[in-house]
Length: 429
Image 1 (cartoon, one colour):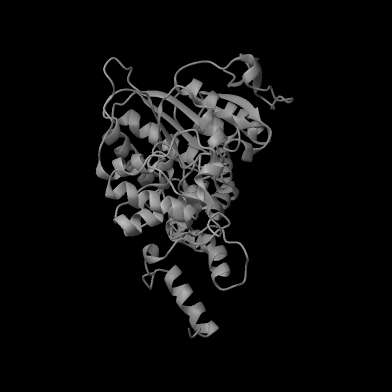
Image 2 (cartoon, helix red, strand yellow; image 1 turned 90 degrees about the vertical axis):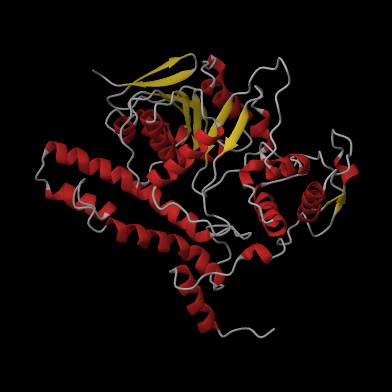
């Protein structure tokens, strides 16, 4: 194989990133070899709880074969679960892309949480739905928004904390695989997800949650659901983040409220968003695209051999939609909402949620904050108690005193109180 000169590789890479060259589809590639696939292990050595069942259809056989090759387990039965076989997010990426390559159908990575066996995936691809048994209670549905990466694969321990039997739908950014277009703003993403919710659950209260930066999308969705006349059964944000540009925007707005002619406020707003005012976007579209290109630089540098690790892991998923998503978070500005919401927080971020004059007070004044973990990365990690708290709040329950911790501080101007193990931010009248 003749290797192209470096300058040719660099030029093509930059042109692809800027959209001047259509990238080749990765769906024809075999999954990348990982430590899981270099040497196969026997199914018996895993001591799975369920007996081996042969696939009963051609699609089930295809999916079981994909599981076996990607995860390095032989053989894989129709009822063997992705998590029981040692699945993680990177293996989920590869399985999703292989399903698209072999069957020509899209299966979301996050769908492995609810449909994690070859039999369940085959049923999902065929459009079959499992009819509830006579006399069985209807299952609640939780819709959960991803974080920065455009999708989330929940870990087994997190999954184990949810014991009510509720159906979990992990929303996934459109366009990160295949040829589908992708949304270019948080409001566009919110509309796509609300449309999906109305298709999957046309009636009844919507129970909505989000991870990290996905909280901005969830707030936009909550407002949109309210506009469409839907009832919000629960809104839980898992340690949501606010980009620095949004905090600067909030600061500028506060300065404008104090002095409408403040040039300093206008400079802060322009520098963080490209806007001249809240009604004049001016250079914001250019700022947004520049930030998306900057987000691509890490992956590009890896492509050119200048870095060992890229910002976005690549098993055939598209980097550009995810780079654009990260940029849109920095330009999001959901309409303030009076909706009642719960925040499950880490100690590191709790103070920002409790500040009376902070951005969260502007965006979500009617909020309760529960401090459950020490660090942000523990929220979606091996934390079954966070999942249990999420489930309890979405179903309208209360958290027990021992479920949450009280932070050792009181934010300036904000009253904090430990009630039923929670820390509740209350605005002074």
